[in-house]
Image (cartoon, rainbow, N blue to C red; front, side, top):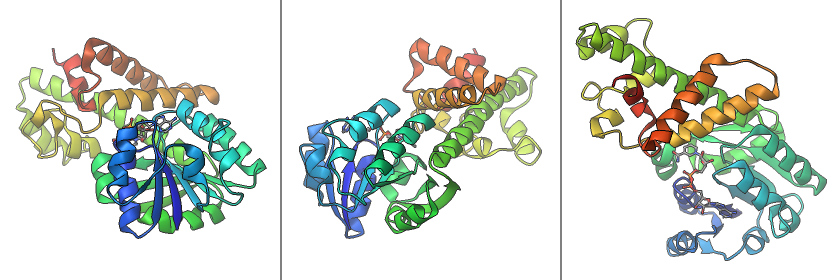
Length: 293
Ligand code: NAD
């Protein structure tokens, strides 16, 4: 396939390289010229603008930081929708707000293009190793068309429903993760202050009803499980500022349907406070420092 890939940061770089490994012809673009040059010397075709990147490709993939970037890249006068061929399949993998993807989807369909949202879970390691989980929103036929491409970059490709549903899953899932991390941080701090050995508490709670994915994989306490960032001075992992972004998206989504999510809202405020103290680049599990002080 001929693919145009836009957004070559922490995630996009590895994803584009995995497409090359799967023998696709991949044109790449980023506003950061060094990122383009790097991929150009690793089997991609470097482009200096979006127009060249999307001309004569069947698929366009974007992996951008936020909704504003996605709007610029797709809807700008030199952007994807004005310049890509009719029938191009557009795959946005960015974690952004649901309204933005729906607006872009309307503009795309006016031009006869197909759009799916396909945000990911699995982090930079997953992007580099081709083991991402893709949660996909969009028409079934567009999802089916995307599966072989997404398979080159991930190992779980799941259709969630109509356009925006992939993002809805991602946002709800990460609200579980963020709120669970705070519950873990409070509980492990309380266990310690009640005089319990934290390893003993882990051994029991991880086999009782307190157990969670976050406890088994991202425990905010050092030297109990191997994969904890806490073992490594909270080097990310998944940065606190990214959790803040996802919890903000969750509150935007909740407000859009007039749903009160007090725990999600409190978690957002706690991450805001933590990051305002200069901790944004620490792993999100470092939120325990706000509690255990
Ligand atoms: P990043 O900031 O490392 O990369 C984004 C890239 O987009 C940068 O290279 C930037 O120069 C480029 N860019 C910005 N505006 C552009 C424009 N107008 N035109 C072309 N390129 C432009 O971000 P990332 O960590 O790769 O994350 C990308 C997305 O994936 C985000 O939405 C993030 O929330 C999501 N995500 C990240 C992770 C992770 O662990 N990093 C995990 C899951 C999901």
